[in-house]
Length: 239
Image 1 (cartoon, rainbow, N blue to C red):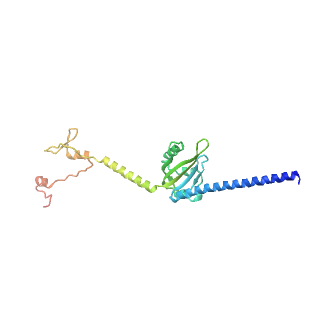
Image 2 (cartoon, rainbow, N blue to C red; image 1 turned 90 degrees about the vertical axis):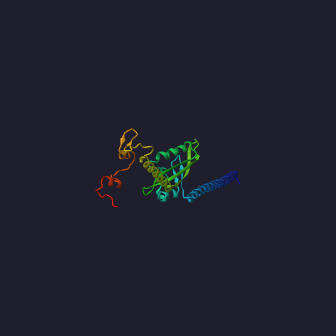
């Protein structure tokens, strides 16, 4: 066997060994990736089992993974929501937008340990649901900027509407109480004409004074004793 043939056989053997090594590396990487994916999916399934929607946002590319529960919470099917941040952003109620981004940016800038905000999101049918939105940065870029941010959506509509109804009732009650005028303290009243002296020293008919200090309305009548005294000929009261 010539030296050239020996050299060729060694080269082929080395190449076969290198290919085998590459295959083992590729297999290990595939298994590692699969294990990582399985763990992440297990986490998603666990959160959805708690009836929470899950989102996984790449803050650099803007791509977002929205779980099936996240979509169904707003009335959408799996293929009706794109993996884009705009799918969430465009559904935020206009009145809640400023507070949402204030809380989100506070976390992204490192001022808070996590992101949390309650806001309204528009559903497929045009109605709004109150969502408790929570998230946290899990990884950063090489220049220490947020990379992966993961969080959950919880439907808190029933609780939030009850709270708002309670707040409205309290507000209505406070407004009603503010309009109530009260009579209190010592009221000087004339022993003869029964006029009342007001806080400015003027004597007023009792009707005028009470009207100024309460919401009472008056209708004039006459009691039985006065009717018998001043109108003895008129039978105003039956015996």
